[in-house]
Image 1 (cartoon, helix red, strand yellow):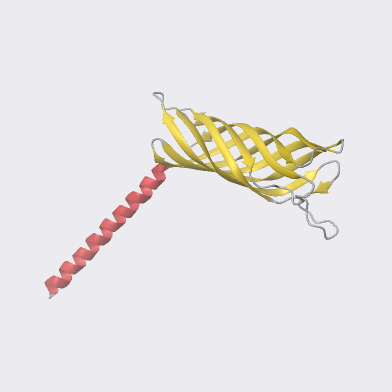
Image 2 (cartoon, one colour):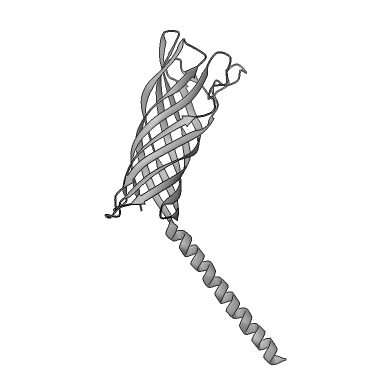
Length: 212
């Protein structure tokens, strides 16, 4: 009986050690496939205007900065998520009256990427996927109109949340420095008044990054 108990105890201890080793091996494998980075870019953005010929939108400058996290599924495929603080501007003309729209918020794109390494250990990558943008502040500057604020119990002029598609193309040097170009397009209409006009945001960005 004592031999059976002793054998069972030994088997339990070995099993626990083995399971722990497997767990540590899995965690180590995941850590090796994760890459953390920082990035910043300059952008030009405007609105795609529909159903209103009196409303015009021209490209305005802005910028973004934040962090990225990439998970390498294989040597040629990866998933990357960016979390970026974003600033966009757009020149607006409504009924021949000019104004500037300013937006501050957070962009969170998720890219499904193909990647290819060369002989110098550099990495070419390209990808596309969904993105979500959450507005923190939005304002027509000359009108001093906060588009996320309710005036006189009326609904706000714009939605804080925009969902759409994003694409990225870039190259990373062997030392981790990265150059990239990205594009985003809002699928949903950002304005709430769909009877008079429809707006969808879009932008193109050129940026630098560094992966640790």
